Image 1 (cartoon, rainbow, N blue to C red):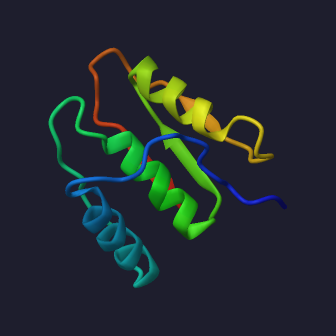
Image 2 (cartoon, one colour):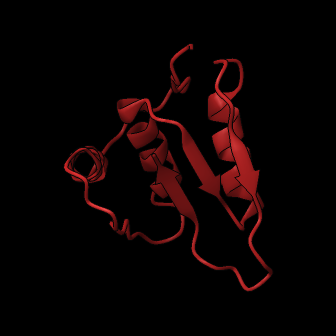
Image 3 (tube, rainbow, N blue to C red):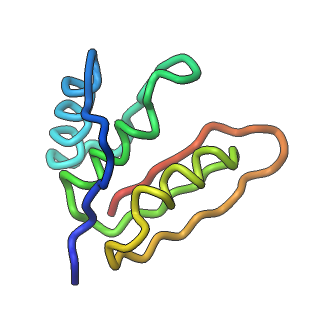
Length: 100
């Protein structure tokens, strides 16, 4: 199976590298619940894409907001990974990325 690889001209900046490292470490250590907080436009989706890339695990992305789905699809297009996107109800429940 081909690896998930982000194709973007952008690189993680600011707090993103630390957040990526902490989330990856938590998942590798078996932590079941982690929270990534940030205001609109701070790069949470991009950060999670980097977590997925670092772990190379099958991942289910639940995204109630169309922009999140399109961003993740754009980053994963052409890399041979199966990505499943599901929309939550109209109540805008928080997005969830689950990596098994």
